[in-house]
Length: 450
Image (cartoon, rainbow, N blue to C red):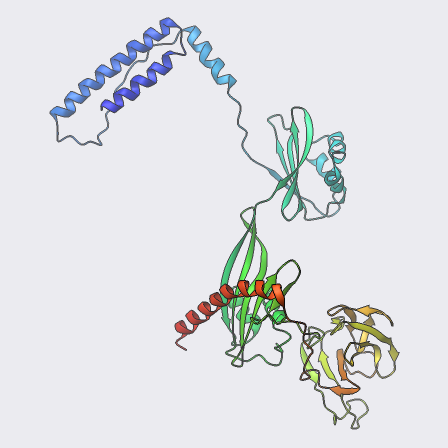
């Protein structure tokens, strides 16, 4: 109770400093009366030890009226305090056919204001190129005039236009982006994509996983029920909301009992996936140069031709895919032929290093020309059924030193592994990642009883 009385006395002492001397006298008298009431309460509490300490009493007290001078001073103090605006934004999504001029008119802003904004800097000039789906945020003052306008000009920043002391200013405002690292795992029962979905992965991220190991595993032909995968990956958040999946940092894929592992390594000089010993997960050639549905005809030197109806070697693989599916260069090289023939239809032949040549037949449309240099993964044409073809597919051949080889089984040249300081740096990176993958795999196997 003593603490209560002291606090009340201090409060009224501070209050009295805001008033004139007659007002102070009234406040002091009132404070003294209240302290006296407190003393009486204290005596009653001492005399009644069984009373509940949480009991509450309400006493009606008539406060002394303030003088006119005191009221005027209090009102002046309140008026001098800044008005705090609620941090509310009105969001407008750009619709098809709209431009910023239209949006400003609909929001009730002067077009002359827009012209002033467009002249502020280069980011503001870019506002003439807005697209459907873009979002503008507006904040108004009490009169409804524009106080601030915000527009995302990149994944990590806003363009912020604001009124400051009667002047228009344009600033770059960072957006809060952070990365969360997650672990997940999956067991294949029906398909890789179904297992990925059960593991919480999007189809795009599942495809990323397949692409990492695509040089070692044929995800159409080689996948079996019971195959497993474990991965550590990122999720990116912006302004507190999920933005997109990030990088796969480390992954293990167990295919038919064989274990494959990959670690993401970005040193500034290189940015690739590497096996734990520093070998690049990529090979000099893609195992299959397109995303296909199934293999409609295997490599077979004694195959019966489906159109000519006679034994004719099938020196490549036929990959079925819908018409228009992009076909990629299996490796870096030079286009030595890009043309059309009655048998091959639209076709492209590429010469590579080390006596290797690849051939691509039956395109609906070619995307390169003879003599052009191409890089691995570059689109060179699109699946079709031109020439001697019964339906849309890619006929793909792999020729080594003049001899046709089965594209699915031929050993592919490897990319140079990490060496020197890069290998040392990678070893420091790989150790904790392998430990994390091993822990994840051990926990999974323990939980399943395997």
